[in-house]
Length: 128
Figure (tube, rainbow, N blue to C red):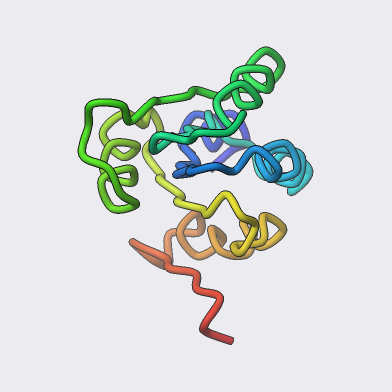
C-alpha cells in the first residue's frame, strides 16, 4: 500500500479520561513514528480536567477529532465502540492515552496487516 493510500486508511482511536498531562506528548510521539495516518480520534469520557481543551488546541495543527462521550454510555468499551463507529479509516488502531502503548511500536504492529499477511493484529504490554 503506498503512503497516500495508507494515510487515508488509518484511524487512531484514543479513549481519554482526565489525560491533560498526556495528550500533547502522545500526539507528538504518534506523529514522530513515521506512519502516516488519516486521523487521531480522541473519545473523551467526561474528563473534569483540561483534557478537552488540550485536544482542541492540538486539533488546530493536526488531523485530530474530539468526540465527547457526554450523554453516551460511559466507560472504556463504550468509548472504543463510539470511536470505531466514527472512524473514517479502514484500519482502526486503539491506543491508551497514558502512553502505556508506546507509539514507537505502531509501525511494527501494523507491518503484517499492511503487508497482507494478517487480517488483524493485537499489541499488548503483557506480551513479549
